[in-house]
Each structure stands twice: as structure tokens, then as C-alpha cells.
Image (cartoon, rainbow, N blue to C red; front, side, top):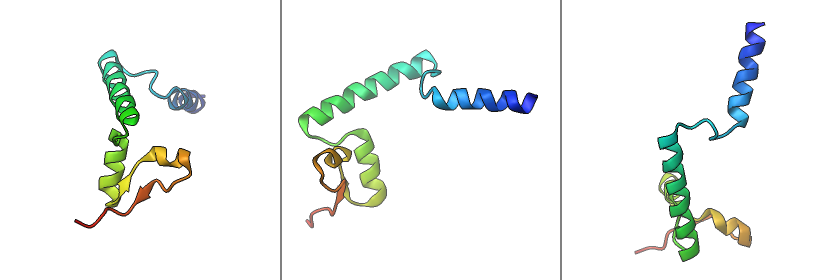
Length: 78
């Protein structure tokens, strides 16, 4: 019975996403979202784009997928 209850609680936590974030973390999440929206509007990379780019060593913009382009492209040679 306890295993089933633990599984139910785990599933509820997983499907709730960020709903259970404490208030300070929720406000940081709102600030990050606001920054990312500004970056998308101005055509600059978002925080996720920067992290993805540095991890794969390419220039990446996730929103390129909406235009049917490749998400990551080779960096231009300097």
C-alpha cells in the first residue's frame, strides 16, 4: 500500500512541473522567462540556446525549428 501511495505522489509531482516551486524560485523562473522573451523578440539567443550551443560547440537557436531550419549550425570560422 505504501509503495502505491509513493508512486501516486511521485507521478503527481512529475506531472505538476514547476507548480510546487517555492516562491523565490518561482520568481526567478518568471524573470528568466521574461529575459528569454526579450531575447527571442530581439533575435538573440535565449539562456537555453546558450547552454545548448556551449555543450555541442555549435550556434544553436531552438526557435529555428519553427521556421523549418536546423536548430544548430556550424560556427563561422574567425
